[in-house]
Structures are given as C-alpha cells and as structure tokens.
Image (cartoon, rainbow, N blue to C red; front, side, top):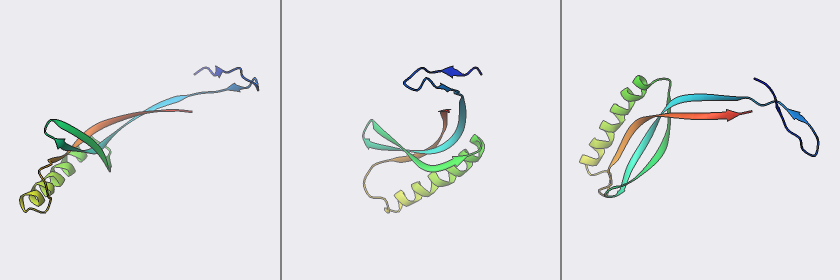
Length: 91
C-alpha cells in the first residue's frame, strides 16, 4: 500500500494502513415498548457462527425458564442472537 502524504505544520509523511476484522458476538434484543427494540452487546464473542448459535440456544432457554418461573419481572421480552460485527482499524 502506498503511503499517504500529509502536509501540515510539520510537513511530515505519515504512512497509513487499514485492516478489517469480522467477529461474531452475542447481542441481547429487548422490547422496551411493543414494537420498539433496543440492542445491547452482552460481552460474548465467538470464533464462528456455529459456536455462537450453540451457546445462545442454551442462554435463551435459561432466560425463558427464569421468565416462566416469575424471576424476571415485567413483560419485556429479551432475546439473545448472534450478529456479525465488522470493524475497520486505521493505523
């Protein structure tokens, strides 16, 4: 990749590069009011979609069981899902 030349007060030449990364993360979707959803990152990252889907299936079962037993109050639904997260790092 060719360097990017920047002319400023110092007249410095700054090399730049960018890299893109993709990862799979667990995301919680919460229905705040009927039809309005908020998404939250729950702090779980996975190497691939299969690992994520297996773990999320277990965690959704836990959430459903807690809700059925009355542990979680209110009528807000919470669903965990896997999403592909792409980020670009510029150096």
